[in-house]
Length: 138
Length: 275
Image (cartoon, rainbow over all chains, first blue to last red; front, side, top):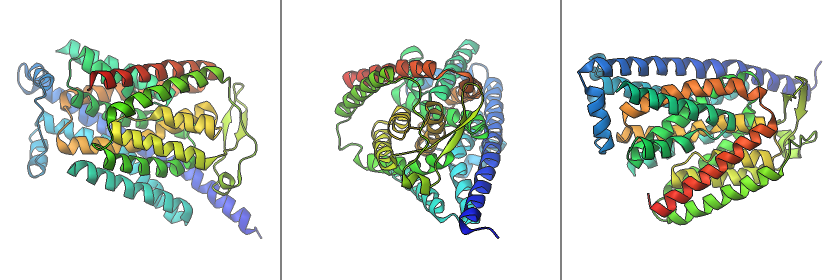
């Protein structure tokens, strides 16, 4: 018969083992997908039209960016191989790495009923969502 | 065009490498290099820098978490403080004069560089305070002979307070504040320097990720610049994460001092040039 303290310690150790095993796999998988999409985007850029990359580079130097993404056209442009949108997709996937990691930890702590860490990760997730909303509207 | 791509990827590789071993993210090199060398507008440089911090954090954390250098629970506790600071900072942006903050930040970095030079090695604690023990924040790291040594953590409220300041600076100035995060863990909470660096690396991705999402959704990120930067930084961070375990703590402190002085110079330059 194990004491509650021993049971808690065992559960924490299991939680730690799962975190150490799955977090790098999660990070590496999303990172690889993002890198593949970015490389495809750059190759599309280089083959899109002669001088496209140089033209875009010079436009960026003069602060002429592509502007807000039109979400309605996003997937159509990705499927059509529009280089800017394909790279944007890669950057979005990359940006989701840390958020996915916090969400994964949150779900794990819920599963393990470690309520202190559920509270910590829920707070961070909520804070990130609020931060993105404030920033996007500002 | 090929040489521009190669130069961008090369610069980003260096930034990712140094950013991952120091725990500072690499934005400190990306922003001035893009503005001064590549003649990019500040807005484009900051957008690319945020992407580079996310990539450094993710790339380096793959090995740091797997090999036990990152203290995941310390990161999760302190992220609450950082996020709080970042949200307060986002509200205060435009109210507080950033020039004064930049000068203050530069002064803090110079003072940290001085303390870092004075401090030798790591003071590893074998007894944590009650709160740290309740949250099970202690861990184990290999020493120079490869033997695992246990460390404990103290002064979480003090570390968290500095993390709020780090988040505040991120929200107000658009920087990663990795230097403040490493300081909070190394000086205040007495974590070993390599653990502080790896844990800071893990944490900076979260705040930078939120900032990068804002920049991306506003259309303030140049895909032509950010894509090669992200690829180079990731490769640099993956390489850096393999080098860190073999670095002597004294060397790491020296790298940290040089970067702190560079940050101070960059902040001073931003304050005085009004960018």
